Image (cartoon, rainbow, N blue to C red; front, side, top):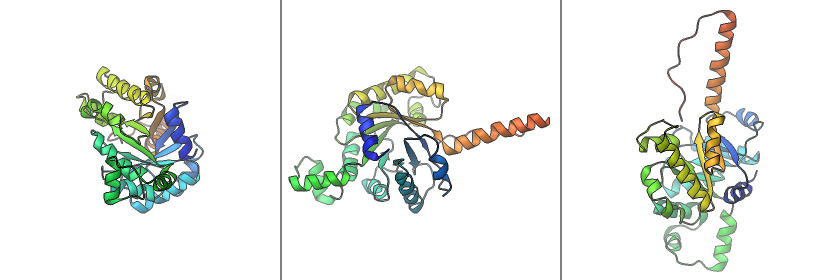
Length: 271
């Protein structure tokens, strides 16, 4: 899948696309990931310690494999957005967006490059571009994807205004932070959480943009988000599949050998 194809699917809503969070920068990993039936990959630099060189290597590798890399940056700084796009990301994900002006600034980073400085500020304020320059910028940024995380009560309150901003390709729910903001931390079956997800996903689709969520729930639980309107699912992470598989099979081997259960782990991976 190309970035242009991913963008078209998100806006048209013709089917659900699937990705996973990639934590490992191992050179062996792309070969493994490439055989898993994914449509894209999610690389998180907000919560995971990955340096610029590693992120760029990962982006360019997965991009060449037909898996558009979506990178979440740790800030709402447009300069950070342009860095990951320059380094090969197909799209940038902005964390914890609560105000429409954040989307506007990030549109400048993702959709107006290489326009910068005062010229970019005036364009974002509504000043029309020279037609020749407008065509050049459109050609230069046509495939860039702009995602925002909606993960708080203030974000839901401002969602209508946020969705009116130009340039958005997808709204992505951050379930951990959203449940915490709602006062029901990690209670993913709570009616308040599910209602909030339904509002976010349905409003995004009604606005003609993609609607997604990153979650680590079992498959039968993930389906409910598609029924609410999601057309993008980021399912778990490479490290969670490793943890679950290793725990399950080691427990099975110990059981077959008649050995006692190993010490409990310190806790599940929650990214």
